[in-house]
Image 1 (cartoon, one colour):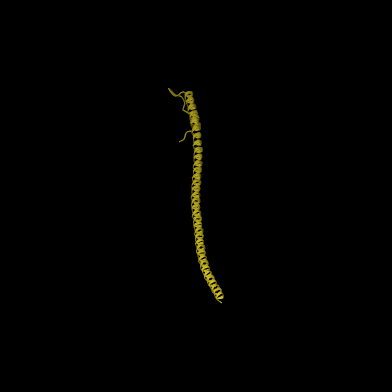
Image 2: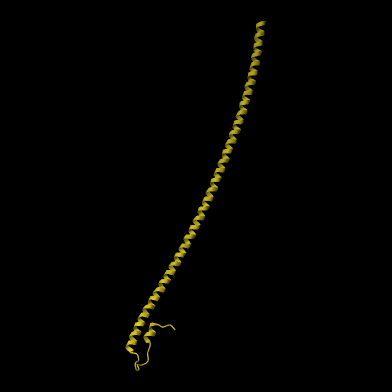
Amino acid sequence: MKITPLDIQQQQFKGKTFGGLDADDVDAFLQAVAAEMEELLRENTELKEQVNRQSRELAELAEHEKELRDTLLAARTITEEMKANTQREGELIIAEAELKARRLVDDAERTVIELQVKAQEMRRQRLQFELELKGVLDAHARLIGNAGQS
């Protein structure tokens, strides 16, 4: 059975008999107990409200912590994805550069071969020209030699 301050204040005692209780002392004591109990109940209520407030604040802080943790995890994931993308892009750029370099080297090698072929062809043409010129000069020399003998 729960006793309230009002129950204590309204408590009635039986009449005074030989050596019985002094009603004024009992009333004073009951008033003091009621006041103390009222103060304790008020303090208890305040403490319960404080606990409830702190529980709500704790729940809010826990929610904020969860949000921060989730945000940190998302940021970490995004950072890792960005690193991976950057790595892939770097590898692609390097591969493209290597391909371009290989093409340039191949083109240069083809150009060198073409120039060597042209140089060889020019040497062959020069040799042929020299031979033809020598033949013409020899023919003229014979003509001049034959003309001088006649």
